[in-house]
Length: 437
Ligand SMILES: NC(=O)c1ccc[n+]([C@@H]2O[C@H](COP(=O)([O-])OP(=O)(O)OC[C@H]3O[C@@H](n4cnc5c(N)ncnc54)[C@H](O)[C@@H]3O)[C@@H](O)[C@H]2O)c1
Image (cartoon, rainbow, N blue to C red; front, side, top):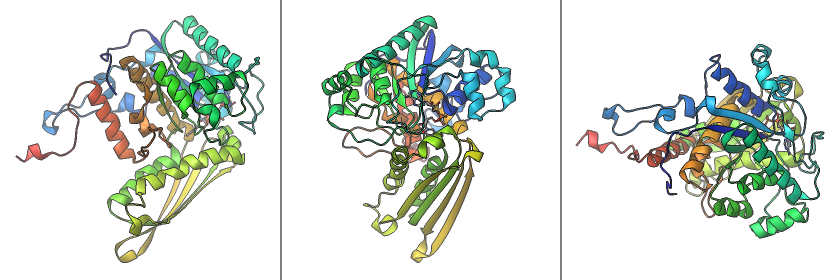
């Protein structure tokens, strides 16, 4: 990927639009506002807290990422989005129950001012929700046009210079790419003919890409991971990325599994189970939505452990993932992992993980980082799949013919080397011979 335009400090406002204004989105918006007012720090955000080493270790150059690379500043962000419920962000944040009431009340007028636009929704794709704040249209093409009108109107009203779209809506049912997804021409024909294989998330993505707006997919839905929309992204020079924010149990998996593999420790089985009680949990209680999530969660270990290269260690390990909807827990999920491993001479050992995590607290900084990095990508002329943002995803989108990179540490190295590349700095190989010559 070529850096077509020099990365300059952006001017003007960046509008961040999220289809879905539930737990993740409201935690993100309220969090950014609390940070802007000096009430909290952007913990968990690489763009805000991270540093990047440049040159040799002896050079002692480790600027903050946000100073090294020209990203939009938090004060220049404006928020909007769509939901199938009419609640403003204040009400939605209270209902989501992630943040303390005191924090939400402290920024109430701001949160009340962010109201969702009417959604494009089809209950066949999210069976456990019934929407009341939903657009009507002649056909899917007409609905896509209405979304484009929303985007243009939001941009104008809020005097934004640029927009990005980050999908934070519910997980849709599992579908495989079919004929209508294979080319832009077939897709546009399908929109006009109300093809049932076109999911609502694809209509949002189509609308954004048609207007040259970057699109990131935080859920495991197929969405922008189809040839038709990749063709559109290529045609309009727009960056895309996905799928499924890497938080919670899968984040832990991609931290632990590379460690086991690096020491050639074998794996017999990995059993993961969760309880969660938020709306996401309710949606995932439907087997078809769960299947989308399951596929995304399961693929991680296979790719990290590479059984084909290490048959003695990882051949036929048993991997199971369960998600149980348990309302009393709300957003405060608990995830258990039982990991059966084996070491020297095949002696068995076990690791038990009990992660009392807060899903949206882990996801919110990812939304921020993705919005800022996707805006950067768009400004410098990167288009199509942004594999360097794999760091943030459970099922990273990748070019055809490649396998996805799931190892969190390789993903981080790739991300930071991409930033060095963008700024014309030497890439860091970690060879380090020069210190001893
Ligand atoms: N929280 C995490 O750690 C995490 C991690 C990975 C992925 N995700 C994914 O992010 C998404 C959001 O998670 P959440 O916890 O905020 O869920 P949530 O249920 O609280 O919010 C999703 C919102 O999307 C709305 N919605 C559904 N279909 C829509 C449509 N077609 N258009 C507009 N709005 C629509 C729902 O009404 C709901 O308010 C989910 O798909 C989830 O699987 C979350």
